[in-house]
Length: 289
Image (tube, rainbow, N blue to C red; front, top):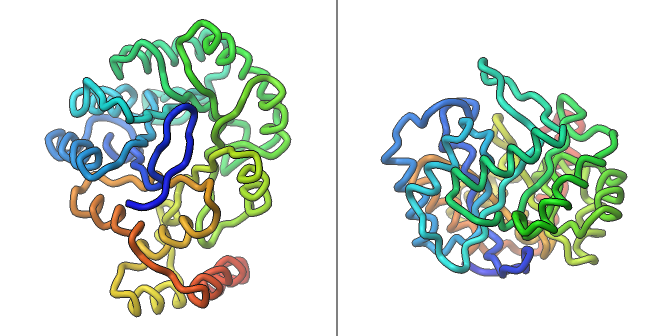
């Protein structure tokens, strides 16, 4: 896999792995196949992945315990990035969890279930909007900053946030990464990505392949066919070309799909193909995908 970026104090390959899909449907409950979930994690690390994204609210607890079972003791170069700021209801609902006690408890849950003395990176996930970022103070970040000073967290990031919240966060502590919704067809954060790149801050798109409805585009399909690749591989390759600070965490519970995702790093997109793909977002906005 090609390309690397300094994330916190670790140099990580730009194509990582997101563990959300290892839990049950909707990231709730146990995996459909525990042995397969463990196999995916081990295959990812064997293939060179050294950036894994997770959270103790996946399951809850399920995904982190799977990571520990599959990979502990962890390779020295492996960066495990988790997030706090939410909890799960008994029905699988996502409930904001921003109080001091909830954040401290979440950090300790992550430490215990991952089997770590300190967490590499903890993202505070803002939960003000139903369908995406919405304004609201993230003063709760001071709790994570306190835990960082205690040595329980090495680095801090933000998730599902606006530029205003990022600015607020950077006044509280150093922010090493931002994790927001972004992909070939959803490009609200274009200007933000460029600003973060200039500051050396990683940008980690979630739903890089379109979310629960995979990307559909005639241009994407045509370019993929010409390369002998899957459309979603091309979508990942475009993200790697988009900016040097973009780190990818596509998720899957299948070893075969994992290998397909990772091979996207080897795709060589021409400037003409990139230019054509750049127009997909405009077409999507017009309902012409």
